[in-house]
Length: 196
Image 1 (cartoon, rainbow, N blue to C red):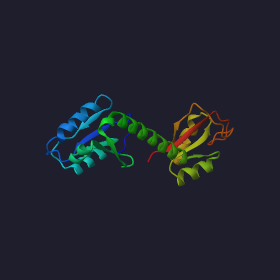
Image 2 (cartoon, helix red, strand yellow):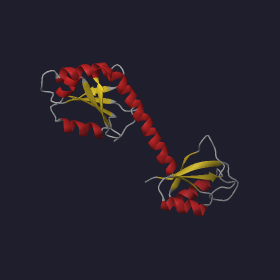
Image 3 (tube, rainbow, N blue to C red):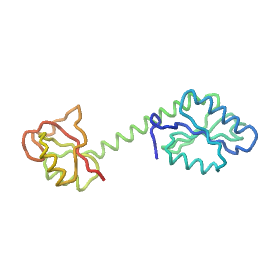
Image 4 (spheres, one colour):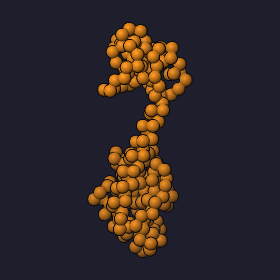
């Protein structure tokens, strides 16, 4: 699971490495306290192995993992790992609050750009019913097509193709003057899609 930081219940998970060694849990707890003022953070100090914890929080979609161990404490740094790219960044402990917030914003922006690009790549335009049927059977995604507004047309499209209307956008495009189904005068451009 990959969750956008702004909706993730836990934005940062703090994982102490070699937590049985002196000072590691204390430092991890201190960092967790500092971060709790700016993000939704959780520290996992359970007896499970670090690898098990990494996997658990990846499956939960936590956007950012913070690792701290004895070597990191010596160097005055932490390791931040992004969930979306798995990229590791070494950050000085003194700059932790600002760097975590900055990285969460970067993750949010990157995920939005990727989702928008994928949506746009998977959205097609149909101006005739034969084109609509071909697109819906050959490619997954959305279809932009004009609609007359009659329920009978929507039901016919659903019956013949399995696609249903998904959205009537506020910003209308005029793709054609005619309904993709019946050929009558079109009223609105509609996004269509098939549930899988």
